[in-house]
Structure formats: structure tokens, C-alpha cells
Length: 105
Image (cartoon, rainbow, N blue to C red):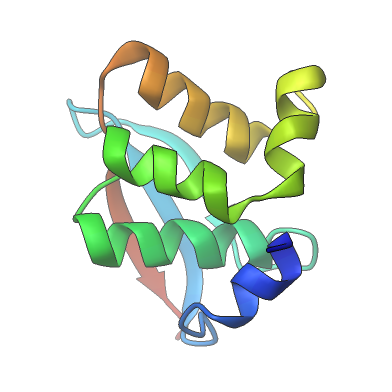
């Protein structure tokens, strides 16, 4: 299925302002805001965190499937899709990222 179809099947992120990704030491390595152009990535990461408890290798592999056609583009053009690049890095490095949900006020 296409990315847009996959997103429609995931839980809403209307209640989330942002998602913080933390390394194993608790340092923030990235943040994904609930903003135009980022909501799809936020939706994928939030669903993965809810299912897996963190962004680990299993979550990252599932995420690549959810990103569908964008995954292939990210592999061909590193840097164009940082949220997909991060999943590829998790798989390559064998490390996981903790997820902190920032609720809307």
C-alpha cells in the first residue's frame, strides 16, 4: 500500500504536539512536530512507539514498510527524508531510541 493509505490506518495524533526521540543516555536526538509536512512522520513514529515501546530494530523495519514509496526514495537520496534515514540508522547501528510524547496543551 501507499504511504497515504498506511497513514489512514494508524491512530490519530491530533492530541500530540510533538514527539521527542532520545538516545540511550536520555539526550534528545530529534523532535518531530505535529506540523504540516511532518504529521505523517509523527503518525508513523507514534504508532511504532505505542506498539514497540521504543524505536528499536523491529519498529524501524515496520516503519520502513509504513513509509512505503518514500523508503525507496530515501535510500536513493540520503538526507531527503531524515525521519526515514533515522530508521535506517537504527537498523544499521542496532541501537534504539526512546520516545517521549509531548501532548497538546
